[in-house]
Length: 394
Image (cartoon, rainbow, N blue to C red; front, side):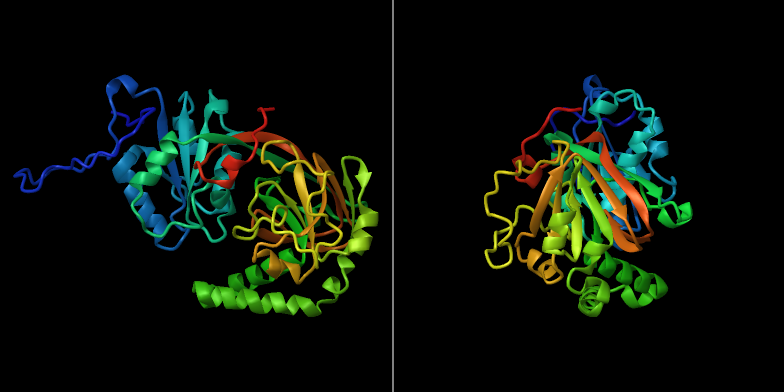
């Protein structure tokens, strides 16, 4: 029988009793279900076993035991989520657990874009975080990372939790007239968390290149943090980030209004287009603590800006000085620049960029960012997502 979930769940710990003479007893799934409710709602999981070291494999086995082997898909063996979505395309109230990092969540959401799901508007996606930054999982309330705790309570919450709409943003990149198209490709045309460029992306890109060149050397989390810190210090003497030089390398237009004058006054070392209230492993540079010393140009309660939301069709645009990247991790705010629904960015020379944690180098081009669609995400009651006002589906 296909294992589906009820609208209300209870954890069933009734295994075959100790001392049972039946040596071939099989462990039953931990969720109580009935035939009458078998087709009302279903939960499936996509697991990236390479995420989180051995944690991915442990999560994979636990999920198979609790929601059934047929409902858990190995993203590596299946070469993506397409197979699982195809097998469940007619489910009316499908809930999906994406087990991995931010890249895995984006992988599942992008696969839904091209799927033939009959009831796509009712599909909900939750997260068991196995990556490093896990900004989406932090924002939705699923924590900074899985540490081996029992999965039954988390699955029960994922199966019954409330949902919030999430804006997803399309990146249209056109090469400059004198540039070959191959030099302006982005690793993914849609982002869910944030897009940034400048000093922060440079640090991420340098670390990414060093780790790929010598993966054994960067297999320890503490070593990675030390290496990241050293690379960060190195950008202080990079001439591109001295005195906010990157302000000369791009032009920014938000909803038809040029921001160039403000860029040259503030002269940031990094710019972030933020969709969710989590950036760089859990910080919120838009809503952080106001610091009168460093945020003198950004008033603590500025009526120009609307309340931050992941479903209102607006991105928050924040600028940082290099030293502020460290202060943000202490809960401080960056420099609020604008909020907008259509962003046009002209890159004049090569700049490092980062999309949802994926760093790359982008050549001269023109970028237009607009809202693509919305996805329904499963949240916890205490999450940052739960505190935000939800707009209607577009």
